[in-house]
Length: 239
Ligand SMILES: C[S@@+](CC[C@H](N)C(=O)[O-])C[C@H]1O[C@@H](n2cnc3c(N)ncnc32)[C@H](O)[C@@H]1O
Image (cartoon, rainbow, N blue to C red; front, side, top):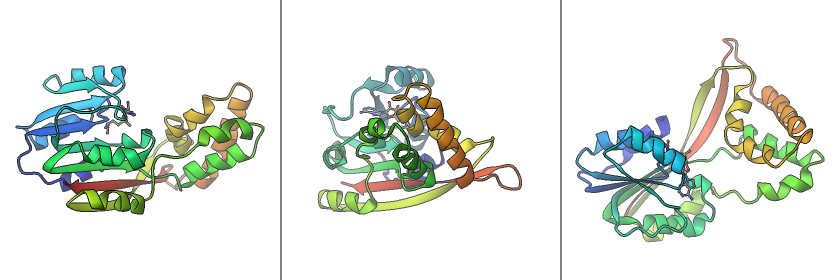
């Protein structure tokens, strides 16, 4: 939640009438948005029915729509567009980000957070395992192009389209419990993507190789905790 809280703290709009929670997921952030702007009409958008069902349970007052961000053409523009940890899943940021900015009403604000941890050992070691095994040919195309780009990409793309643009990164030092918690963490997201393409015995072999490398890269501290620095990119634009 902390990156969303930090972004929300820096998102200034006195009295938005409408707020869009883009890629709202199960509605974890929506209550924070509602508390910040209690008079605004909030709309949550996601393309997962399962996520939206949980969001509707959590926030019955909010309108939740099942829309795919890539193809959605909203009928109205929003005073605040808030998007936390969602746009990294959507390909083609060169077309996507101007489209997202275009969803914001004149005088409005776009506030976006995307993880950018792809240069950390948690991800680069996965690439090493892909390159070093019988699965290389199978998995190399899956690796594909990462949607998330460096800050200067978003600056060049968006600065001609907006009035003000602030981009920053924060590396959060996550303190984790468990035997090999960084491997568990990535298994919930990025690692799973590759494992889903493999059958046994490659699947187990791939995971075992990755887990061994990760344990070495992220050793337990004296107190038994493991530190996992995680970089996130923030984009805040007024339109
Ligand atoms: C990691 S969750 C973040 C949820 C929420 N914003 C939060 O911070 O807790 C990412 C969400 O983006 C949604 N998502 C991914 N691609 C999408 C797309 N093309 N259109 C709409 N939603 C999408 C997923 O369904 C998922 O619920």
